[in-house]
Image (cartoon, rainbow, N blue to C red):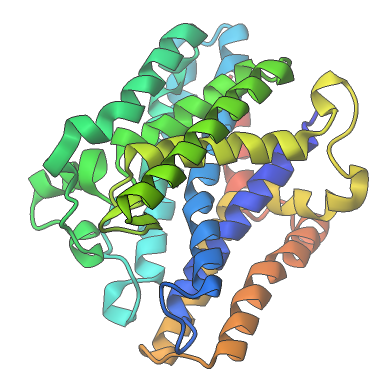
Length: 358
């Protein structure tokens, strides 16, 4: 049975990614970091990637779990893994070219990113399905404290364009593993979280208890910010929650919000009922099933926009219209795609690779 809330979660994640990337390319004039609109945009942005990686981890683990039950051999696993790693790496390169720094974009062509992180997650999936939920929970806790262990190695002083560049192979490996935009440490936290949510799929009460603990921890981070008189959340800099590099409080808070969002979208589906709001959110589901293709394709639009704008800022109303319009446009486009050209997508390509194996 297809779990519809998973498709909806994927849709929410990728649409949030579209929103934050569009806002970065077409920022409104006169909106400062302290403006409420900037805070709302940052909140969506801060949740987008954690949701995207968590639900991708859920999906990879689900696929690997099923193949383990089918008794895959080493050759079968290789036939399943290699196409995924190749497609994800190719998509990362394509994203980097579409929004390249030289054309007003944000990436160097060789930049490791969220899709290379997912490629590594795919490589690890056959191992993760052999670990108990207790072992994966222990690894998740290691990822939670890893920002403290990394310290200066995470590059808190690095600016964006330093973080997406690498002068040699040693720096490239460092960007991939611990100080890039989405390094393996600590971002594997979300992949592990996805596997644990998967295994607790039929136990919503346990997940709700974990959400409650997470919300308590979230409240404590707000209190720390108030007492210490520092910002609660910033993309980078002096704040309790930071995205680049991901701080320990950021991991806890964003992980909690991911679990909460998934539980809200789930409704009674885990117990044989329907997802929240029944069919009223059904229009989101095709976008969820097309999340990788949308993720790559929206950078083609943003790359063209970056060249046209050439660093210029739009007035507030046009900027918001462009951001919201570009974000929502992918919902009907995904519906039309599924109806008319369902076989033309990166997801379809991966399915064909899978069918060509065992």
